[in-house]
Length: 361
Image 1 (cartoon, one colour):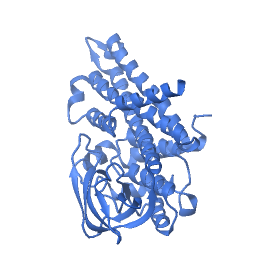
Image 2 (cartoon, one colour):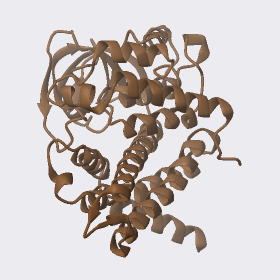
Image 3 (cartoon, helix red, strand yellow):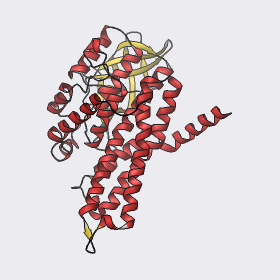
Image 4 (cartoon, helix red, strand yellow):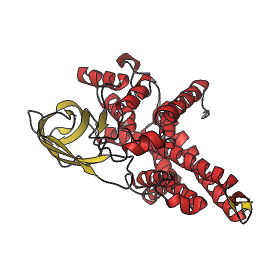
């Protein structure tokens, strides 16, 4: 098992990094979209699609690249480092992994092709589906909370419990009875919504088993961990560079032992998280369900603590780190939103410990 990036993966990373620096900088792009309800710029989204990043996980027969979660993680890390606010994780990871794991029909082919060429923005509402009911005509009723990127999406993939099992439905956001309401969180680069379905037509795509849903949630956790890793790496680098030139008492603050310890703590946290994230990205495609889930638990358990990097970086920056004009608080909020996603790290550490203890008996 070699977890080092290949030449092709390095090229993907560098190309994505250059594009984001040129076309979607924090000052001229991210900040302008903080209060935008959709959080997406059409030109930037088209650019990401033209680079092939939206179709990384779409099979080649549907116009995608047919790559793995490792390549998706490479892009996710760069998007996190750039604090990119668009619906990439929803559209390029959650939706295609859902569709390829659960479905195989013409309707799915159309959605996947649209994701690959950037003409369809899709999201998944897997975190809250118990309150959605579907009748025999495919009309959906209920409310869904915490749906990411619903205002930007063309299609929302919805789960609904029926007597015949859990059904996966594709719902067009321009359908009758579909409404969204923003749910404001700490991170303005992450757009979440409460979705209301009032006799809204949905196209049934497949029957979803609990194992299917768990697999997609694992994929989403792993990819979001890569995004958080990028954010933590970027704010750490900013703090370290700041410590090299900021002077106090006639000396650069990086020469003070206390500041050095803070920088080392950040580096240690980032690199420990990196090992778990990189392994989990590989495991998502290479290992069976049990080992994949264990890798996702590790990623969330340890990368979930990356918010401490944002907090420590602000200590290095001092007063300037608390100002609206500085980007440090935006990174901290991104990391805090990751820490809160599907529960804090303690829950995952407990489950991880229990699984490892059971293996040893």
